[in-house]
Image (cartoon, rainbow, N blue to C red; front, top):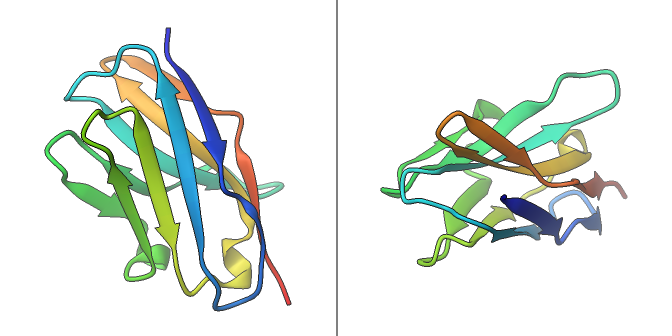
Amino acid sequence: QVHLVESGGGLVQPGGSLRLSCQISGRIISSSVMGWYRQTPGKERELVAAIVGGGITRYADSVKGRFAISRNAAMNSVYLQMDDLKPEDTAVYYCNARIGAQSYWGPGTQVTVSS
């Protein structure tokens, strides 16, 4: 079984930064796809950033140049560095791990960007 727990959310002013962390327990393999998603009320959950074992990354157009996803060598932690935050980045952010056909989610962490 794989468990994910996010941390690092909070309230930040526009233009500020936050770093989200996702701690992963369980069996993670090098081909796992790790990602960060976000969701606001009434909207579908959307992909923010993803990283695969080889270090290849993918970003939503709305966060390119502002957010950076990374993972540690042990592949049991995934991070999302968020800079130049905007009010429209306000959402619940979820960590996701895709291992083969299985998809695992953390409970989410709230990020609020407001002055």
